[in-house]
Image (tube, rainbow, N blue to C red; front, side, top):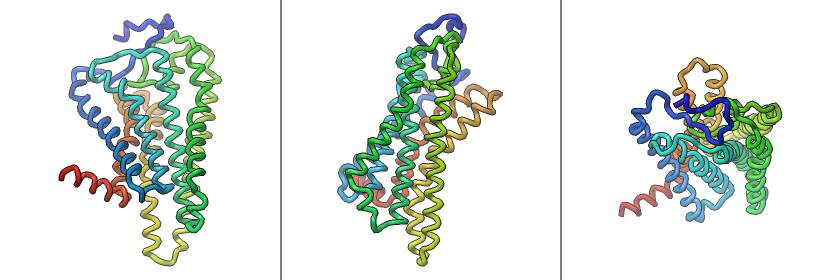
Length: 314
């Protein structure tokens, strides 16, 4: 299959990489992946439905949770066609334009998830450290402005390097490292001057993912300081409980990113299957786990879902 891809041409299609050496097991591998995508889509849609239909959940905290669910839902939709397409034998290649579009949405949605998690940390900080002004600070109009800012921040600044991908000359074998397209993967195949894309992408990661992580950590230092100053042990426990679900969501997002970075940086000797698996974990783990975390840890969501399922059964 690799021999079919010429390194000397700038063909407009790229070969997607599945689990090399396990092609005979693809029908079996497709079963858990199909199940994961079904849970991602149904779980996040269910969270959105519960928030939409339950008036008591029309609060800033749940509006931000809805933003997170929308982001996770879109992440699942942006990769389902290539990941399951390879496993089901429906596709093997992807056009350059489709690849660039997919990379745009994957990276944009990753930045969006980071921004939403930062906003949720700010929400918890206000709720715990300044509860009397919570409703006056996080008004509906301000939440809409925050949502639009997150959208612009996530997708506007990644546009220049993504557009540049269209005009690069790809003279190396058109074989991608994953079953979906990433900016750094296309750069690896380009023979053009990629310095702008490399430096710009690095600065973008520092100014978004890294900065967001630092600000989230800083907000929890302030939250911890405020909670420890509370005299009542019961109140301290209640305050900590409101943050657990968000802390879990932050870990679920950042641990796969760090793990994938470590594998790419230090795991060049590892099997390509490990790289593909880590890439899929990076894409699918947060959208899979977030609805489960919030359904289990947030009592309002849990009780509404239980009531919804009991009505369905009846």
